[in-house]
Image 1 (cartoon, rainbow, N blue to C red):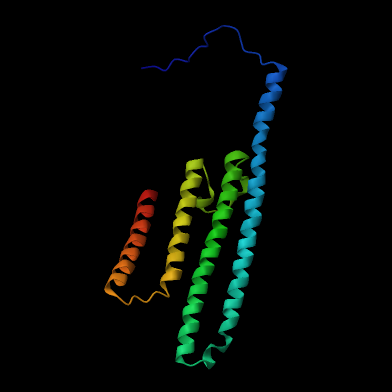
Image 2 (spheres, rainbow, N blue to C red):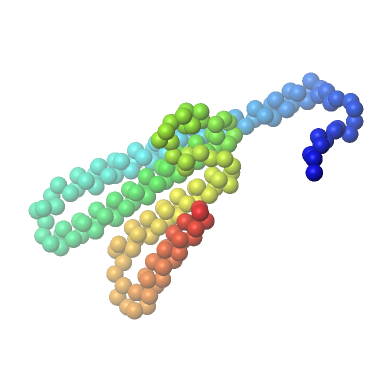
Length: 187
């Protein structure tokens, strides 16, 4: 079966009026309002990266007297340090979400980032083709943040009753299921 070109219903060619041309130009250029969100997300990402870096610096600086502590003190400092490090991973993931969001909005509404396509080390996570693509990538990073937050809180949980241990195990299974489903959805 051949594909024949579709011919217009009327033989007259549509010539837009000046008002229509100006309105369409204004409408098309209104997409640049997205730059507000792009710049705000980018600045916020830098802010989150800065805050998290400072937190990491102070976490590491608290370890200078680790060797002087008794066993109980070392155990407590170790648990707190692991919790802070996990929280820092959370902070870096949040910064990454904001960065992905900023780049994705720019590529969807303004223009493709030409330099990203020419760099050999550019990650596919930064190439956004649709709003659904951006949403999916953000959802995966948000799931990672929630898992990290769970891990951060779970470090200090000490189940004392069988029911608490069952809830703890169930929560771990749900986290594993979330990872499995997010991975399966990707492939």
